[in-house]
Amino acid sequence: MVADIGSVLFVDLLGMTMYPGSPFTGNIVRDAIQFLFIPSVFIILVLYILLGRLAAVGSKIRILIGVAAYLFIISAGYYKTFALLAGPYFIFLIFILGLLYFIPAHFGGGGAAHSGRSFRGNAGQSDASFLEGSGGSEGLGRRLYVLEQSKRSLDAAIKELQKDPTPDSRRELGTMLSKSAAMDAEIRILKGDIKYSPSARAAYLKEKHS
Image (cartoon, rainbow, N blue to C red):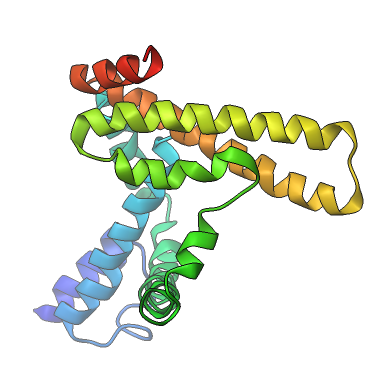
């Protein structure tokens, strides 16, 4: 009975034709966690990041696209790839990133965390300002305003470097351009967030005109 459930779930539905062989354990509960639940969370994370650039948060079309993409991954036979990637991804996420944050926080006096937030010019204030302005929906409006201001400072610094580039400044310029692109993406997401929050829009306009 258990074997039949596993076969229907993993072979017929998810297309994992290696079942019941390796890497499956034969324990249906353990296999369901490792090859159904965790890969599904991994797929949702990937789709969440992708859809954040395609549709506004709270938009019904975003949910529709996400469900359609998830079903496409299963029906087109790509689920197996995501399932095999999910395990190593979560190991990296839990252990490696956990150590990177735990060790500096407890033994490094916060230096690593501070250095990870800094970049050229006044734009380095953005992450600290995010934390100060992250209180609820109003915090979203303040965060968007601060991010836009930091983006302007960063773009101004990029223009200065582009006027007289050197081998060293080109490397720094590449980092700054990547940061600028990431800021653009987050600004688009935040604008989608505050679109559905009157208090966030009010906080943004208050900051903008203060």
